[in-house]
Image (cartoon, rainbow, N blue to C red; front, side):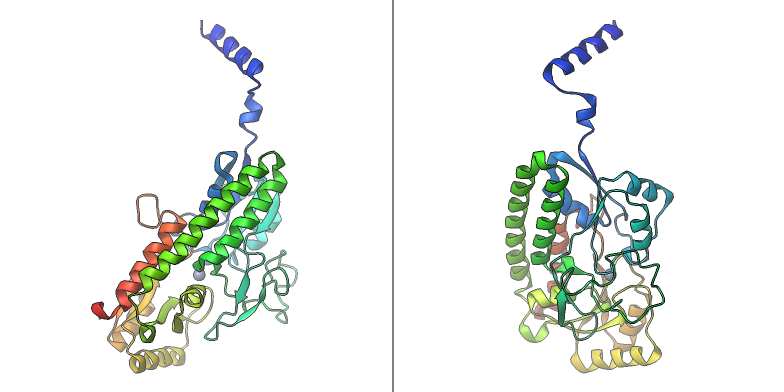
Length: 328
Ligand SMILES: [Zn+2]
């Protein structure tokens, strides 16, 4: 009886043109971060399967490949990376293992320099590479190029995520021309949502007056946010674009002096990075640490930053609440 059903099913599939192979012909896409994966799902819709390499709430700066993630990379049709040296610990392995195209989603974004002076230093992939475009093992000892000068936290400005969206639509359309029109339409719809998000974030932040738009962060991940919404980064606890370094005693003393001189009410930290040093500095300056921001990854599905849209709304609310005059 069961055998007859199976034969019947196969017959129906043959007659209607549905085959098992066809069901498996979705593009298999790996995105390094959960944030890129969310954008890719919005562009790909039903025609792609997207998996994030780095788990929710993990620290991408420190992420290294597991045997499972290495196997996923080998299978992927397309690997989407942030670029700008964000995937610093895993990037050489990604280039070594991936068989499909590796696409830098931030290609074409105006990159900011890392540091207290967050000036624009060039367009990624055009006049600045941030040295993540190739496997950097061969010239690891060469410090003459611009490694470390790029701030990789590009997604904190929704307009840059519009660039991601277009780059992802291009990559999907090239790999799967049959569904190119769908990818283009999905991208256009998502970009319209990002425009609305940008206006909504500005509205959430409107309770913070210009003279209060000063940010001190644990690790320096808000420069693109500051650039987009007219904030100034006064200082950071961890003296690098990455989470993988520590300040000198002199840098700590300077930061405490800045906090005391400006009356900034809080240091912003994020869930994926230890706030121990930020806590010690905040104690010394007699201010608070707000440690609930999301930085390099989305939250789990049942928490408040499960999509990029919610991630931006949530962070904007946390910052607005901490810096608005009514809360200090
Ligand atoms: Zn970071």
